[in-house]
Image 1 (tube, rainbow, N blue to C red):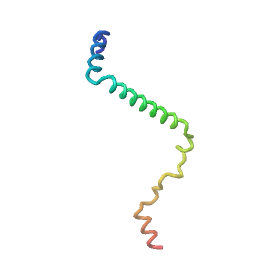
Image 2: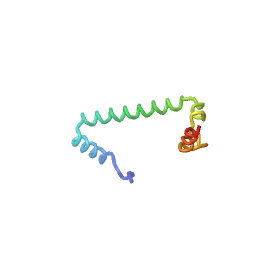
Image 3: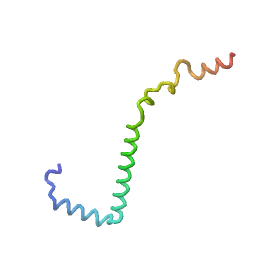
Image 4: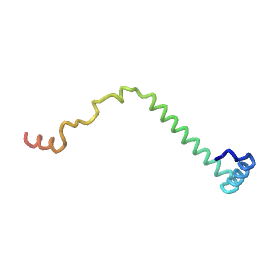
Length: 78
């Protein structure tokens, strides 16, 4: 699809984009995009550094042996 696009066509598109948005707005857009990528990478790095033990810990999982309705009837009977 983009195999037939030459450098001159890309330059024309770039000039049109700069004319529409302006350099100040494009700079702020680039800064915001860079900050978002940096935040995403730091979140991914922190997720990889968490110990796998937290993921395997089943003590925090819900118990499906009885429903909340069954538990309330057990508490009311005693």
